[in-house]
Length: 145
Image 1: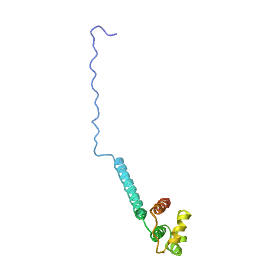
Image 2 (image 1 turned 60 degrees about the vertical axis):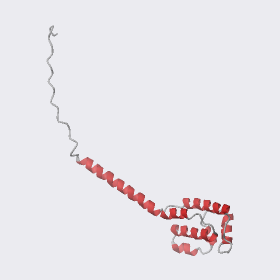
Image 3 (image 1 turned 135 degrees about the horizontal axis):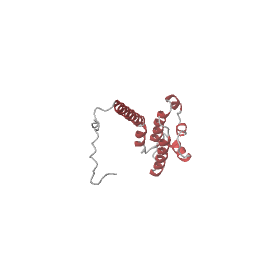
Image 4 (image 1 turned 30 degrees about the vertical axis):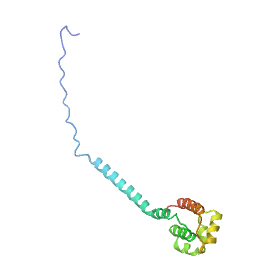
């Protein structure tokens, strides 16, 4: 036991090491930063390539406002040329063969085949909208090339 009035001496402050410096960074951080930058560049290049590969699809969407039968058949043939080899598409001469590759209703397919290369090949706005809607759905269901 300590006697009355006795106090403990102040403890000496221990010597601490100096604060760690932020710079220069250890080499591991540099390697990690370079790897992250490389991964971001690769991801950007992949996205850019996908964007460029799908240019045909964006252009085809813009042309979906055709007003006559000949334009619709030409549009389908252009889309098929992107999806299939030119040698195979060139064998499909008749509109029946071209339109068989699409997901159009039989009624619309028969109408387009009947009016193809005829003087009266204008379509009513309602039928035109149905064709555009079905061809848009077909276009979006095509695989990415």
